[in-house]
Image 1 (tube, protein in one colour):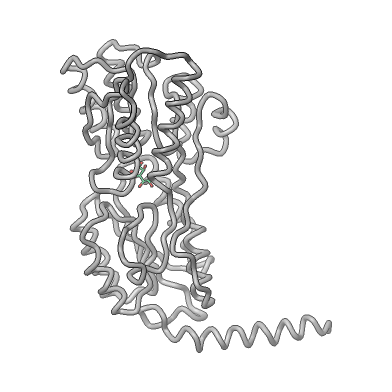
Image 2 (tube, rainbow, N blue to C red):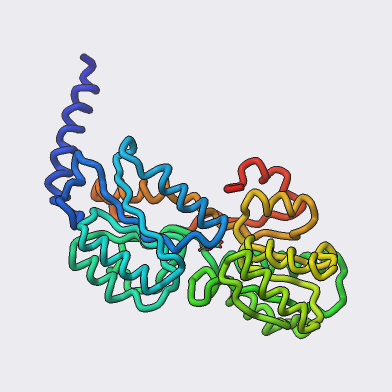
Length: 329
Ligand code: GZL
């Protein structure tokens, strides 16, 4: 037998034994993280959007026994209080890891401390929590302020490229108020408007990241008779709803500038069709990367506190090439 294989064999055995020593039941459960499957409690936001559906599927597809995991799933139905109870239930169940995609970013310290006290590592996914570093293992997801800055810069460049001189009157459809996705994307627009005399936010209201609420809010804005030429929708689903409302009111949405976030396949097609002008990308496909972070933690690796997804924008210049790899439907 090749000596390298023997050394490798011995090394891997030592590593295996070492792991069991340096990870004595790191999880809060039966410590069955060495040799057994790793039980992961995933506290999900809800099922409010195409992004969320794809995000949930990414976890359910990957966190399976053949990959060494068991997934315990909880849907908070966009209820922040229920979600805190979901995490407490995971602690009581003694899962090995908790993954949390927080509905909103406030009031989490006590629950995170309870997970820490129970010895259960907690990973924040999708929406960041601005809490003390020792209360969570790591964060993986989008840079929401960065996504907003990308969308705003695209608008600045588009206005210049098109030689637009009209005042910029913006309808701002916000996501779930208090979520870091909404806060970052809103902050970028609010900051941009501050130093542009000809930019005005004529309406700013939450559509709760859903198509139905986005349509409802857009209908009420249309009924108010406000003048607008830009729609800044903080996700694709609200953009779809707004376009539905505009069509129903006989307004040609293709004469407006429509900005969206996420990058669902149907939204990318709408960029190709000229219905949406730009999408600031935000990938929901986080399952495999979260699993990799857990495996690295199990191997005793010290993880970076924050990992941001790689994100750009999708407009008429690249939508055709992005369509085949776009997530969801
Ligand atoms: C972003 C995510 C947001 C999406 C919405 O990471 O939290 O929530 O932009 C989803 O589509 O509902």
